[in-house]
Length: 243
Length: 234
Image (tube, rainbow over all chains, first blue to last red):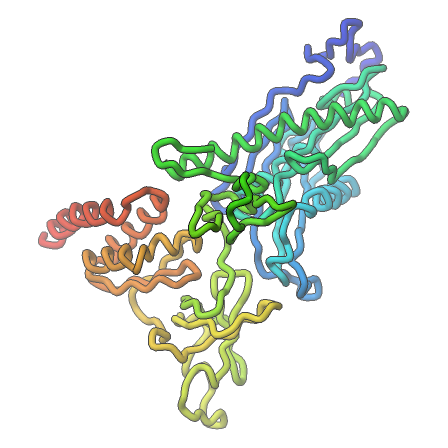
């Protein structure tokens, strides 16, 4: 990407480079049951970020030493397609993908009743098809839809979105440019319909306590909005089944 | 969300299932702070002061006394491991497979059931750690040969069997097939119109949530049978 020192991410009227208000999300679309081979699947698009999630299981867990007689486990793989970014993404796992796989698993685990399936695994694949920031949050949102679609028992859905700081403003749903040139990125995952947070990360070059509070407030609003979209996607998919 | 025509409510995980505290939580629900919530995506169903969720999807989890169709995955010295279309395999010991005395010096277990062969077995016991013990000591249990085996979603099995077996009996009668539905979603079909039986079962699976499906299926089978017989006569 060409370095552009003069880029204006947010103007004096509080309008962002892509014409959004500070608390406005990019266009969202969600679809459930997009893959036939998977037990559950979902596609979530937020702006130009497009993520496919697939769930398989519960199934027998191998290698055997990972098996747990008291509970099943969740195995999450976050992966970026080589063509998902402007510069080619080297295929295969890397430090960043391992970290996101881990935090995504920890964000999803609190709602899944894994203890009902001892000795097994539920595999979750998060594939980033196109990346324009907020991929970990969007990946978690997609994964939770795919888990529900697979018929895995859950306490609720997990919804995630990212707030951030651009210039001196706190903004919702950071886009790639804002992520690269902005001041902070705060991904947040919540249990839908509750105040419970299952993921909170801060990647920042300076964020005050007050700004974090504001980012959390905004992120929560974003999650509420996405939660409605998630419910809509599931109801839409299954209304087709019963009619 | 309520579907006005059929009055079926689709629920998703976390949806509250009742507000007045009148109903107890049944299968696929959980209770928190006195309220009952859905655990899976499905249809809300109330019966005898109990609210439950009939799931759309899900894997089969072995249950005691279920009759299932499994395939032999491994033969060892004194037992068989049986694959059950489930996260858990079943174990069938020699003593559970027959009443007769078998001299293991003379015979190997693969002479009775070999890898890849299909058996209709009963689940004798499931331990809390999900060890599944199988038995052939049931009138229905046997080795399955001939015909065909198809897989349907385990969550659709109750619909496929119907109330007191009416649905599967309808299909059996029209297609002149023996049909055995394993609780694990495997269905064995053997008889005159196997193709038609398979298509009928696929149709039931697809339209599982339609009301009065048994009658619809009778009509459909009668109609299809007309065309099948014409082709058969040529």
